[in-house]
Length: 189
Image (cartoon, rainbow, N blue to C red; front, top):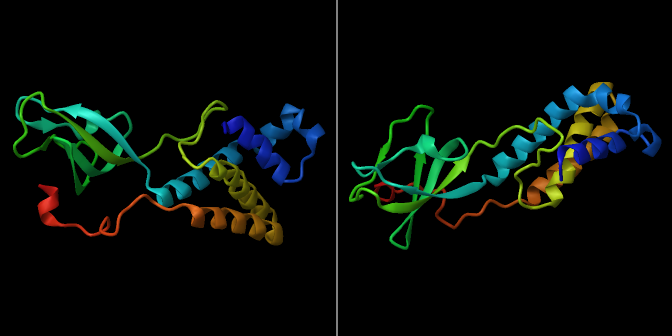
């Protein structure tokens, strides 16, 4: 669902009818704060989901790879797939981090890296949230409308919309195994 669709859903949650949505002034009245509240809800949902992106990289002449070369800014490396075997690891990635050395890595070897990432903010009408379950897109509008209603002092309606957002977040389960949160030193090698 694109941001433009989320904005019209946001206005409907605030009580604006179909005729109000035809006028661009209605959307412009709420545009800056609505977009910031949509992003706030988006990042809350992503923090719960912990999305992982997988990319193939090749090692340089020293058997290293650069964590800054991924298509999205990496937060942590979760696993490596090398020689058909998946090895879990947890390596926090800091800005400006030097290339990571991979023991036994050969120059030009290709491996697959799964990493958590910082998503780009929603900024234009054509942007779309990077959330996989499609149902969560509509509750981002619930969250944004709840923030506006709370600022107006309409806490009962805001509480209902916050509740819908929180219930949807409970349905999100991060993809993990039973030992995903346990760090083992030998898996980081």
